[in-house]
Amino acid sequence: MHVAYEYILAGVMILLILMMTQITISALITRQLTYLEQSGGYKTAEKILDALLLSPGDPPDWGRNSSIEPNYIGLADQNSLRAYVLDPYKVLRLQKGSAGYISPAKARRLLGLRDDYHFHLRILPALSVEIEGNGSFTITVKNIKGLPVPNVNVTGYYVPKSFSPTVEYPIKSNITGVDGSCTLVFQYQQDHVLVVCASIFGVRVVSTEPPGLNFRVEGGRVFKSDIPMITEIDYSTGSIVGLEKEDVSRYVEIDGSAYIVEFTLWK
Image 1 (cartoon, rainbow, N blue to C red):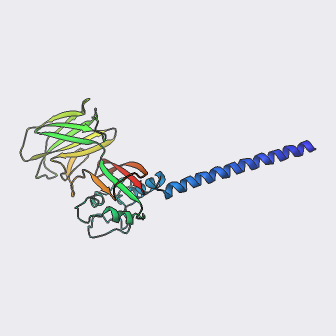
Image 2 (tube, one colour):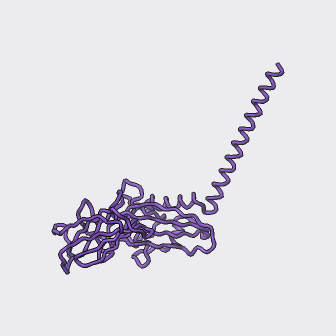
Image 3 (spheres, rainbow, N blue to C red):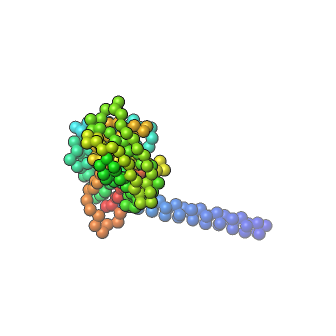
């Protein structure tokens, strides 16, 4: 009989130890997560960036009207059913000198962040496409670290400056070699520009020569865009000097091209 009580007592003690261990671990995890959020840790940086990229903001069409200041800032395209597709009009309002420019300090307030939080947001093409030449063009593709990317499918569209949807234009394709470059040869025409689409493993980037023209590529055809091509957005509330920081990044799509968004948060 006493042996049975001893077994029961031992079982209760083991159960209590397991419960206390679980409570202690849960408390430690909760404390660590709270610390990360309060100190601007990875969880906070990721949450802020996703809120910026996945929400269209309020009102959801604030990007197209430069006189509207949003109540809440979000860069998502309200008409897209896919995640991480950004509205180019909203992205352009982060570019200094643009109509309806929203300063980093104002964006911080619109994101609901306190003044002791700082961030650096950078948006750049997922692939760097360098175009050199005049008629005969050398295309060089590099990744964001500046390394050449081989086996990239490169298609060039040699279109007139006075572009219209019905106009015919030559199209040439090639694949980059080990040095990340290839050549596209067209018959030189003074009133023409080059639109290049570079793609590899589903990542597609459109570039132009001269840079920043109002073109996009859809379904193997060139279309005129209402806004210039986004080359880079560099957007910051300040400089990081001896402070702990957290970094997070996302792949996004803007006007049919792939971009990388890099976000750094510190306080």
